[in-house]
Image 1 (cartoon, rainbow, N blue to C red):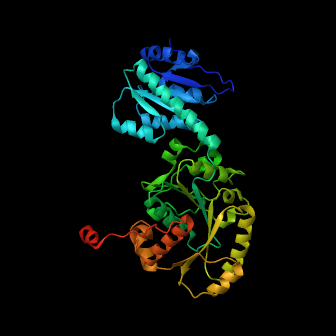
Image 2 (spheres, rainbow, N blue to C red; image 1 turned 90 degrees about the horizontal axis):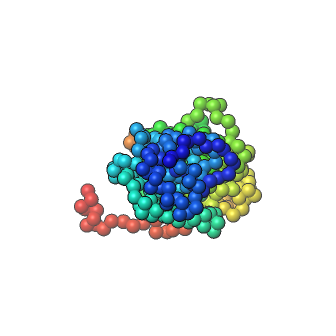
Image 3 (tube, one colour; image 1 turned 45 degrees about the vertical axis):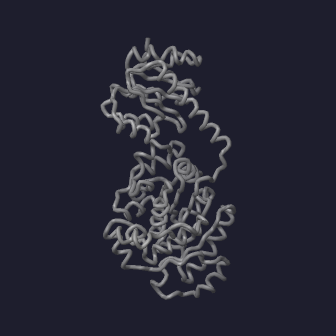
Length: 406
């Protein structure tokens, strides 16, 4: 018989738990879990709703079987389940709805597999076996994979208004357009513009992510981000001024690392005022871009910022990008600027007000709206420098291809 969903928190993480809606499924599941010497008392009634209630007060098992048969909104209920699950939990869903779109949505949200009733012992046995293999594979990756496989690019401007956020949005778009699954993390909690540059409202999950970075997984990100491109996810917010507390120590590093587990590239827009109290965001970086102009003040602050970065993140590769070049006359000659900061200017990004205004009116970034503009090509130069890949963006269509693409 199916036990009632009355779980007492013991502090010990169980191997599995199953929440099913009917006695027939329970009777099919019982001999399968008995073959593994799993506890038959961990089969409970009530489906996914019962799972959400029960798991709110106990350590989440490593493997969950949840029944969606009685769910009116399976996607929303799975999101509620994600909120009480720990990262790495493998979820096997059951249900009566034979719907390819639902199946794909569940897999995209991080569910390991979805089985349509009526069940058989063989189907359940195979699904549990592959779920076990997935758990073991995750453990092996955690133990052996070196940190830093994901490119974690931190961008910081030496002063406000220098165009760092615009550069970050364009770089993120270019990463995504190169086929890289990319996350843009905007840490300007009150005045962030990353989503706005794509004519989008920011998501509402950044505050939750900062409060508990370890809960950032595929299911969490599904509701927390906004996506202007199939490969680009933006995590940011427009919190009421003073309405968010300062991130806890180490939270930013944990958040960037958690994003790195779900994306090929993580691009972080860091307001410079955060660097005094949150050096952890620099420690998470594989690459750091310092955005400047050729003013005397920028030269002074660039010297201080580069020294700070080298002390906090000595392993990171550092790049200097001069932005909005040509907007105003340079106060410091480029060669003198490089000598004073003791670092070469890796790329100069020209100021192009016409291309910028046109892209803004169309609700996108320059790299998308005008890929052949000089400013877009400069962003590509920066991307090539960061990735050490000279082939990026250099492939062009043949004359015949251009003719028929019009």
